[in-house]
Structure formats: structure tokens, C-alpha cells
Length: 312
Image (cartoon, rainbow, N blue to C red):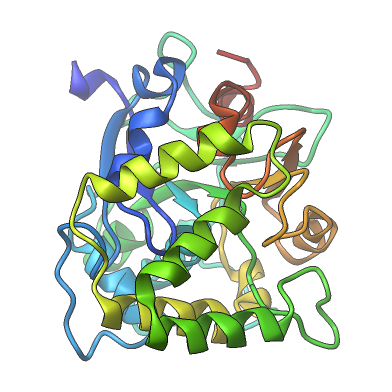
């Protein structure tokens, strides 16, 4: 029954839609009550012309999400998930770098399980003593502020980067000229730009051809992304920088990288562990930018180990 399973929000990447989740292994999908949510202007999701920044996109997703869930975001979806975690803190009190976490948001030191996995009322954490640990219990909301701050119990961020484009102090990212090329070609030929991006996602993967076939099939099953949404999505990927805000997110977080990813270098993991105290980073051998499709079983095992220290 759904009530016995934890909620899992799924956020896809740029230019994708919810059909990509059809490739998830049963070892993962059978354990959760899935809530796939399409990003604004992608698939069947609406897009408003004034949804121009990351908080707008996070609000649009939060409006469709359950009151409490684990959130899994892939690429641009991970950026939206991080912003949602920031926005579901105590309203009106955004934290800056170095500020203290409110008492109601601090992680708990215990958790409970049901058949090796959490229920919706159980706690979520990473009990492994061999890696960075953190446990977050579901708070008992006594006010609207507390209720909002408890909506996201843990984060799973797949091939994500708090800053997707390189800077002088952030080389583990995409070169600026790559994004400039995407912007220019998107105006001339959106379909060709999307196809190029799909190819980049699988480049270097052990099973690139099959992964690309799945991505193409997923795109074809639903309406094409709206051009304005694609443009704004690229703007978010190029301009957003959440590095200074990662320490403000108290939830335990698992960052999964692809060993052969050409869009998000796996070397960014070392920086993440310094910037986000509750983070655990893991690289999937042989995977590129779409490990959920190419290495689904390895991703499912990593998630299980993150949540409870056991594999599926």
C-alpha cells in the first residue's frame, strides 16, 4: 500500500519529461510511492511567462509535491530540488553563509525503519560509520513555519552541480563557450539543440547507444518542451550559483556522479563535501550524465545504502 511507502519526488533534467522514469529498476520503484513532477514547460507541465528564475520553478514544483517526501533531482531537476529545500525553511528567514540552523531544522540522531526502508512517518538518514553521517527526523509541525521546514526529509542529487558553468574558482563544470553555443543554436533550431544535448548526456557511457535510445523514446512520448521553458532552463543552468547556500541545507544529501560525465565532472564531489556538511558523494563507474538510465541498479543500490546502510 502507498501509505506504507515513503514518498519520493522525481524531478527530471533540462529538455526531458516524466517518461524517463520508466527506466527505473523495480528494486527502486517498488519501495517508494513515486511522485514524478515535470518541470515548468516540460511534458504536460504549464509554463507562465513570468517564471523566469529558480525560486519560481521551485514554487511551481512545490505546489504539486506531497507535504513530506524524499526528493530526487537529476541535473537541472537537482538544482530545483536544492532551491526547494532552501525555500521550505522557515518563511521570511532565509539563511546566509555561516548562519545557524534553527533548532526545529537540526538533524536528529536516530531513525526507524520498516522492512529496511522508511515509511512516510519514519526518519531518514545515512547510518554508515564509514562515511559522513547525518540523520533527519520528521519534525512534528506546531506551526506553518515548522510544517514548511519539514517537507523535504532528504535529497538525492544525480549528476548535479551547484554551479554548472566554470568560473575562475570553479573549474569542475562546463566551459562557458558550450553554453553560449547552446543558447545560440536554441534560437536557430530547438530540435537540433535538444538532440545535441541528448548526445552529450550519454557521451562516454559504457552503454551510450542504448541510453540515448531510451532518452529519445522518453522525449517522443510526451509533448515537446516549450521553447521559452527551454530558454529559461538554459539560463538557470548557466547563471545559477548555489555554492554559498549548500551549508544552509540541513537535510542529509546524496550526490551521485557519473565517472564519464562530460557535463558535470565527477571531480566536483571533493568540493561538495567541503561546502555541504550533510553531503555524501558517490561516483557510478562507467556512467555518464544519465546513470539513472544506464546504471539503474547501481543507482538504486547507492540510494538504499544512503538511506539505511543496506543494499537492495
